[in-house]
Image (tube, rainbow, N blue to C red; front, side, top):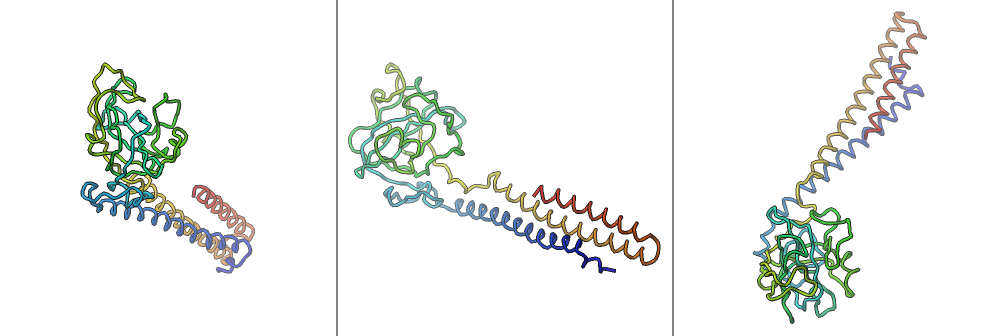
Length: 297
C-alpha cells in the first residue's frame, strides 16, 4: 500500500521534508541560543557592583570598553581643550544638553569628558567654564555612541561647537588630535564644572549666570538588557519550530491521502485514472502550502 513512497515524485517530497525539518529545528535552536545569551548577559550585568563601589583605574587599563568595563570608574590626567555641547539629551524627563570637553592627556590622545548636563538649549543657557591647568578626572567609562543610542542626533547640520554623537568617529573630524574610542561621565561635577564666565566655545550670553552642572548617570552597556530584540529572538524561535511541525503535518497528511486512494483503488471503489488525479491534486496542494511556509521562513 505504501509502495508509492518509492516513486520519483515522492522521492522529491521526501527529500524536501528531510531537509526542511532539520533546517527549521536548527534555525529555531539558533534563535533560542541568541535569546539565552541575552538573558545571561543581562543577569551578569545585574550582578555587577555599582560603579561607585569599584576602584578607579587608569583609562588605558580599561580599554577596549566591553560589558565588564562599561560603567567602571576611569581616571585620566591632562588639560581641557575643545568644548562641545551635545543637544537633545534628557535627564529626569527634562530636555537639555551635555557639556563635553576634550581632555588632552600626556600621550597626545584626548578623552571626551562629559562634565555634566544643563537644562534648556545650547545658545540660550550659560555654560560654566572648564578648569584650567592640569587636572585629574575620574568618571564612569562609557563606550562610544552609535546611531542606535538613545538621544543621538544623526541628522547633522548642527551649529559649530555642537555634537550629535559622542564617538571617536565623529570627533576625529572636528579636532586635530587623536581621540580615545570611549568617553567618561563625571559624577562629581563640582570638580569639573569650573566657575566664572562662559567658555570660549560658549553658548550663552555673558550676562546670565551659569547654572550648576548635573551629573549624567552612566548607561548600561548595549546588549545587556532584555529589550525588544531579545523577545524577538524568542518569537522567531517559536515560528521556526511551528514551521517544522507544519512540514511534518503536511507530509503525514499527503501520505494518508495517497494511501487511502491506493486502498480504494485495490478495492475497486474508484477508477485508476481518478485515483491518480486525486493524488496528484492533493500533492500539488501540499507543495504549494509548503512553498508558502518556506517563503515565510
